[in-house]
Length: 351
Image (tube, rainbow, N blue to C red; front, top):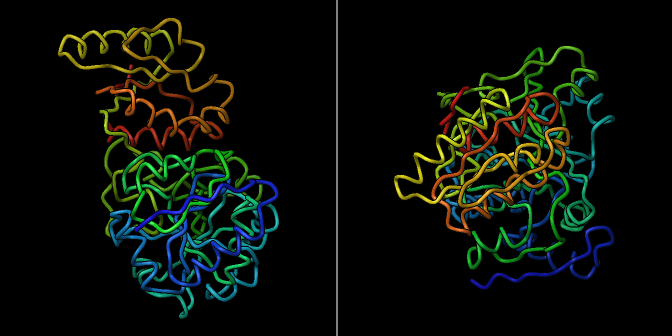
């Protein structure tokens, strides 16, 4: 298969390119496209054969349900059993945007699209290319992240090409995504609503809108979670991981610096090439074969934006081990730390 790459303006997408990609979707083909969070790999959510092809292209386990993307509220009515009042509140406040809501599914949704569950995850992206593609495809689009399963999520078309060249039909290249971590997934089939995956919409914002919101045990887990079934992407399986071993060091800044340097010496004595990923505040206080700052500890938006790109860069530059400084879990930090803990395979050092 030849993967076609079409460069497209993120703000004012060329309608001819959108129509070409939409025709691919209608034909059951696989199209990678940008959202505000990460690049997604999209197909018609109601075409079971096409959805199956996504799992195969990504080497994605079939018990890991993709998120279904819509451009109109009328699409939600088709996909779900009912839209409860709290969902209407959230849709009005946060859509389009990085918030995925879990509803009871309707009968028109193929089993493969929801991994055999009785629920469905739905969101409306806040990105012009994505919205235009969904509208012109005239169908809801099932779209997990456009990467090989388990690898760092793609925040640029080059990441998609690196993982899936020759395995998918088209990539719409609109440049880097803006947020950089996936959407928050909120389960509305339980009371109180429960965050299954933290992301671009913060816990604090959801509490302000709804009052009581709980965190799933999987969100703050510091060891692998055992669940019979996953109601959301990013729970059951290893995710976000580069080829290099990732070690997450959590604690007070001066102690983190000391532990990073100790681990760096140990790994280098073993002949391993070591990378350090840290805040700009401590970048000049640590040393290794490769040191990268993902931003200031006071600018979590910048850290989220650069996180997956930098993990991929460490791989491309030949590091064997990446020592990562832990962050606060307030605001967007909850999503960032969730990704880092999973990327490390829960190899966490507390200091």
